[in-house]
Length: 253
Image 1 (spheres, rainbow, N blue to C red):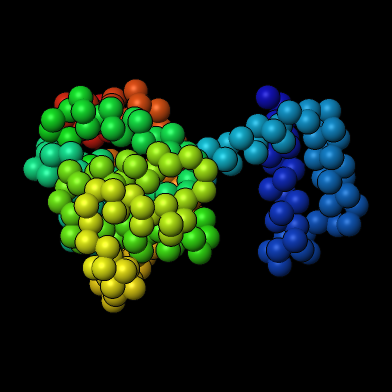
Image 2: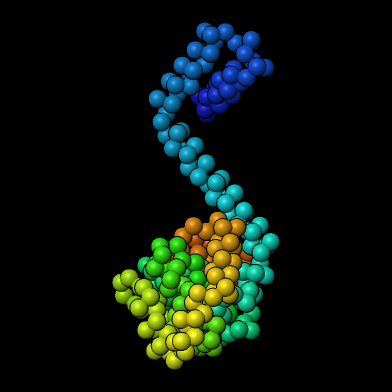
């Protein structure tokens, strides 16, 4: 502890020595002595560097979570209730789970089973699906087709389309997306027309803008209550957060 205090004091003095306030108060020899103390301490106790990096990582995560929570509060209605999104499960459910996804995202494909299981087991769950194509031009094209399909299909048929397409093995492109839409009975002429419409472009732009505000740079990403999460989340963890929302109005009680 004594050495750690000495290190902290030495570091502060070393920083201060570079400012005009202290520049004339420390000689070159004093600065060298302080630097040597800090150097020797770190060489003898290298774990301090790891501890500092770990602490910095924790603080960055807390700050990032706070930024996302603020964004959820500011844009909550658009995240949960925008007309530019698909709603599956119970449209009048008491808890909403929002997923930002890409049809070519491997982790999104893995998460499909968890989302389906949640919907099947929870008749009060409302699920919002937001196309966030981040994996290249073909993902964008697939998202355009999916958006066009969403415009004409009811909730159950869109959910069937979504599951067929997201459960497709390997890469998903225009051909697979059109085949999935045709299989659930979509009007294919209307799909071809609507996929390049201004409405489709506006819908995908809105999702991209929300993702930017939420600092989402990958998929899947989730919003539950005021919590925003990036990455795959196991079924049990999603269920626990949903249960907590009902219990106390927060994802963690």
